[in-house]
Image 1 (tube, rainbow, N blue to C red):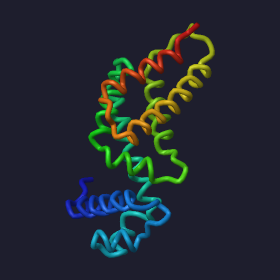
Image 2: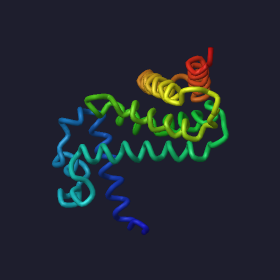
Image 3: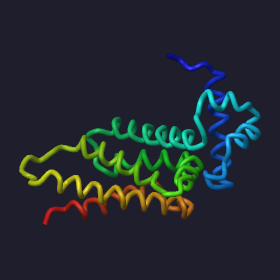
Length: 183
């Protein structure tokens, strides 16, 4: 079902307003009233789309995760750097959005959840070696790597993204290979 242009525009205005407010203050301080006044919409319009600012944040996070998962789907049969590069380019292109999402939650867990979802998808798509031994060990590696990648991406975002996505992708691939290398 195609979404009406007015509905898409309204959601865009609400989301834009919300992300701008997140740059100024923490999520807990943002109210529906403030979003509506700034976006110049009424509360009923807001509630047609979202329950509250937390629901809005959750939907934005899910949208970000799904957009990156679709990149992974399209990058099957590529090495890790080739998969990570379009993800990092997307993050850089949408820097304001990702910076707002990473700073919005009190628990700072968005990037960790993002990394886990992405790496789980990469893990599912990667070829399995039946002689590799304990499969849970491989998932432990990927969980460890996902946490590290989330930290690196968070640092990259907070430090102004001075390094190119290509450089970050190469570093992430090298770190990942050093963790998963069989001794």
